[in-house]
Each structure stands twice: as structure tokens, then as C-alpha cells.
Image (cartoon, rainbow, N blue to C red; front, side, top):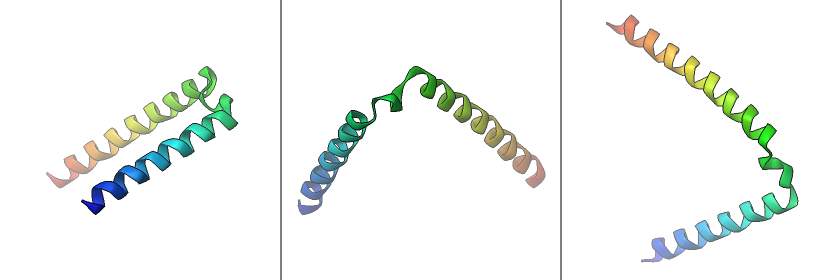
Length: 60
């Protein structure tokens, strides 16, 4: 019971901090920044897929 209450309070504080962060820096979620971030994440994903595939091939 106590863990559930503490988790709820922690989530509420986290959401409040995120809202304050976005309010203080609205350019954080601009279209340019989101495009750059998604491109970076896509490249990192492809690299991770290649590395995992290579490791699997080496273990066989």
C-alpha cells in the first residue's frame, strides 16, 4: 500500500518537473530538434541491430 502511494507521488512529481522543463524551454520540442533526435535514434538502432546480428552469427 505504501509503495503504491509513494510511486504515485513520485510519478506526479516527475510529471510536474517535465511540465516545468517544457515551459521554461519551449524550443526543446521544436520540429528541427525532434527530426534530429529521430534521425540519431534511427542510426543507433541500425547499428545495434547489426552488432546483435554479428554476435549471434559469431555464437553459432
